[in-house]
Length: 201
Image 1 (cartoon, rainbow, N blue to C red):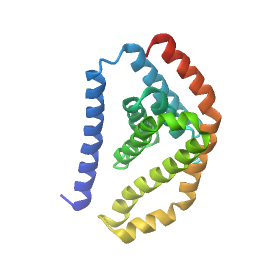
Image 2: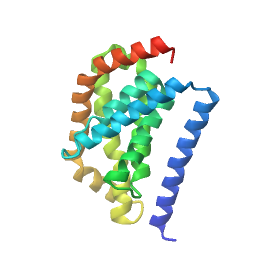
Image 3: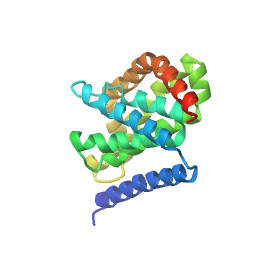
């Protein structure tokens, strides 16, 4: 087996392992059906948003919806929404060895949003900063895949080259996160808050 093939297998196993751990935690918490349905709805919205903005490269609301899921439904929900959005939507956009990287990147963005939920909800400047950081993180994390694909292995020079070549996309990722979070945070936050309170999710 080639070194690159080994990296692909390891990345896929890591992605699967992370999802299994999150599912196990959801089961351990005895998550109610309403909560699971709400996570599924947010995931579906995230996937649909990727389809709607398919013609606009790198400028999509999906990361913002994943962040909002983490902020209002918790770390497990944020991770699952991110990972499943990447996995399921890629049946249309294309599955490949890059899919686990997308799953882990979006999952991590949703998870960290949950950990920072209190300041993210209270202060919009912090929300904007996180939106920018999430866009940069996603691009830098996917550049690992680009490096492995282009150089068939680990290479600092290759990684730096990937980062530099992806700068326009990194800017678009960050900008789209800021725009869509500022547009969606209040309406989504109010509705999610009401649903969570009403149904004790």
